[in-house]
Image 1 (tube, rainbow, N blue to C red):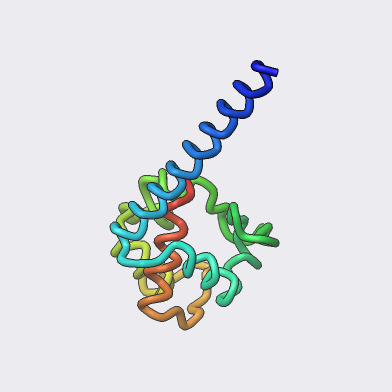
Image 2 (image 1 turned 90 degrees about the horizontal axis):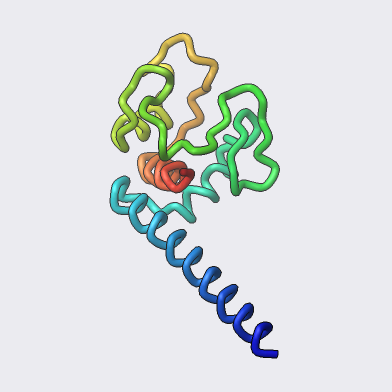
Amino acid sequence: MRRILMLIVVLGMAVVSACTRESEVYRQAALVTGGNPHAGKDAIRHYGCYTCHTIPGVDGARGLIGPPLSEFGSRYVIAGELPNTAENLERWIQHPRLVEPHTLMPEMGVTEQDSRDIAAYLYTLK
């Protein structure tokens, strides 16, 4: 009985630790971008980003046209050429063809706020 109780306590601590880490990652992403990662996940669905990209945590996001966005928050560059900063990412999300004229990524009419929110969500992917 004591072992079972100890196992429950240890598992509970692991769950709390994982939730705390996720909360910290979301908080950091929001600070860096001025966006809301939860709203970003919704915006990814709204703009259909999942049709071209594989995006962890987004249901049905198994696209094979654009690059997979797993571990995006740990990448050094965006679009193979831009330093991975919030400003560059937001510009890329809003106007990809102004950054890279030959990209396949279309202009989707993403608003400034939605680009911050999407960037915030992508920065949680580490």
